[in-house]
Image (tube, rainbow, N blue to C red; front, side, top):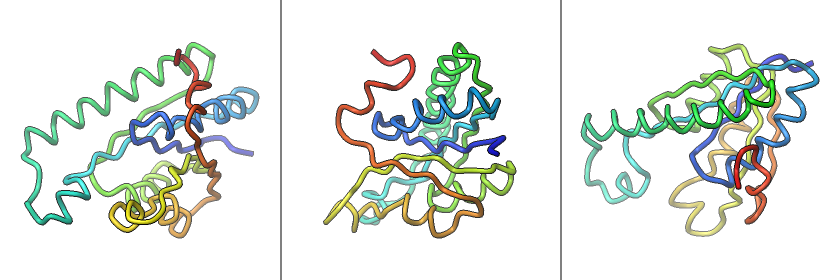
Amino acid sequence: MYRRVLIPLDGSERAEAILPFAAKVAGPLDAELLLLRVVEPISPVVAVAGTGVASLDVLEMREMEARQYLAALAERLEAKAIRVRTVVRLGWPATEIPAVAVREGVDLIAMSTHGRTGLDRVLFGSVAEAVLRAAPVPVLMIRAKAGQAAAVPGRA
């Protein structure tokens, strides 16, 4: 039985495609959804170009935006009587997601994949694949397709 489910989100509608499924599972089980947003210290494109790191002000602003984003999603889920907590971490998603899973004692990681291929996958990597390899708990993945995000609770 799943009592706490970690949902990593990157701010995209495709990542949010996991939310309707997670909400349907969490409600009857009275499971808690732990919404996670990892703020990267530098973007992959900047890292490839080797131009440096983001300033502290930019990082603080991105962390604040991440908290607001998760708070809005949590409010929509709580309106459906689902227990929700939010977590924002600074770091790399592929390493932070498994680390948060351990730290928070989750039973399951549920996430959408972007299905990147070719050059995008080389430049940005596959966070989903890295999480799957490093996860200390089972991982449920769905491949989000365009238009699937419309089913997200609270989205028009």
